[in-house]
Length: 352
Image (cartoon, rainbow, N blue to C red):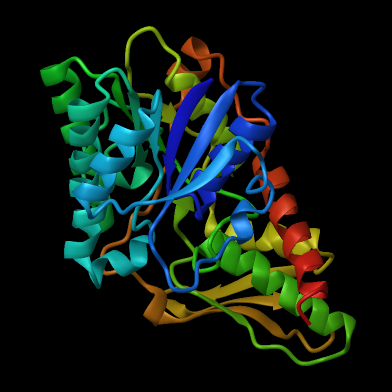
């Protein structure tokens, strides 16, 4: 039985990976889900697999090398999949030192623990399309220069470099997969896609019960992103770890869509027709109106959600992963929006 250590187990990607390995991959594995010591941990993302006999929670912290050394030494994992991170781009300007400590130095600590205690262990580092930053061309591939526009993006770019250094210096199986935007029902509620689908569910419920509602407040709705389903991406990550030689790959949908389009599709899927209106040169008056008799505002712009430096357009080229790994996402952009909206509408019924 192969042993897999997964960090960030309470988050979207860590939980999606564990769920895939334990319930869908047909692999004979034991998964150790690493979580930080918290006073009130939220286990909602782990409900599908936490009772599995081949799963175990373990305590550790990417900012603490002692805990990482102890875990790798004691577990002797065959695979170490690092999904732990401070992953909310917007807050990385508020805590840049902590972001680098977890996202960059945390990767060094993982690599050092493996080098010392389990040198045959295969290591996966989760990269981000944010590393591309102020892009030079589209779609972006691995040859695109690193041009980060946030402390978060810079921390992921640093992680990419250090993984390469350890791979070449110590002959380690260490890879840094660059994941373009990926969402799902486990996505944290502070992220824009989940903020939209939760807001749609709230407004849907208000209309159903003939009640007033507050609009969803967003920042830059003209940004374009390459969105996929997290459940598809963890399959790609697992395939990356099973190549004969370590190699970095991009995972993406190979499409790009604006936040405006995500909003429109989310409302339309919930049965609420609507349209955007904007005045040229006055971005703050951009609004999404429901096509009802009173044309109520469902989405409006709030400048507090603007980033100090924005990334305008991310659009990945995952052709190598599709051709060499045989990977292909199953969920389309429309399917992802539908999945998330349906989930939040159903969830809202049980929380009101």
